[in-house]
Amino acid sequence: MRKNGNSHSIRHFSDRRWRLPFFASLLVSITLFFAAYCGIFSSTNGGDLDLISLARTEDSGEYFVESDFKNSYEKSGDSKMEAPRIAYLISGTKGDSQRMRRTLQAVYHPRNQYILHLDLEAPPRERIDLTMSIKADPTFRELENVRVMAQSNLVTYRGPTMIASTLQAVAVLLKEGAQWDWFINLSASDYPLVTQDEV
Image 1 (cartoon, rainbow, N blue to C red):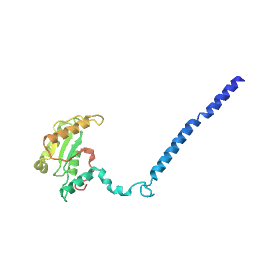
Image 2: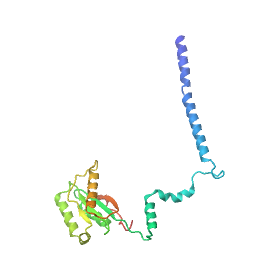
Image 3: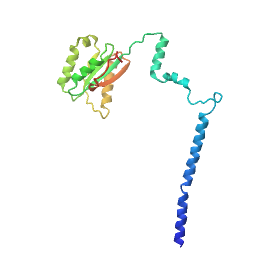
Image 4: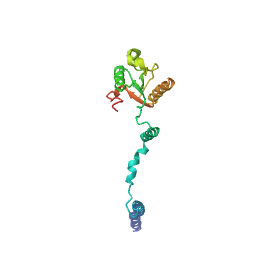
């Protein structure tokens, strides 16, 4: 009999355990609801609903970098904006030299700078052929804006080697004093591209 009495009180206590969390969450929910209700319907314009200021959406461009460039060009008085100079790193591996040349031709613009990098998996003969084809092109030879990196790095796509190769290309461009505004890293498999003028 005594055993049944204890189990009854334990069961009675366990039936009440849900009440404290329930009422606490109900209190928090009601508080948040009233806070949201009062915040949304607070009258700053004589009782008007002030959800979102629609006039602010027109000025949303000031949150983006492009608006800074637009403002600087407007202040300088240049109505005709000069196209940016872009530095490209086009990287590839064994068997990618033809695709690298095709990618180079797709994005080539005389104002830009280009660095081609074949990693260590590519045989030396392929690297030499790529270098000779770049030197043989009359446009590239005249403008001297296409380079093939002499030092090849082992590039794995898991780890810091890709970043190290990119930083090395940037260092070469900075050391040679090449003029550029933006840097883009491409691989030989990025071929279906549009030209810079089409962008």
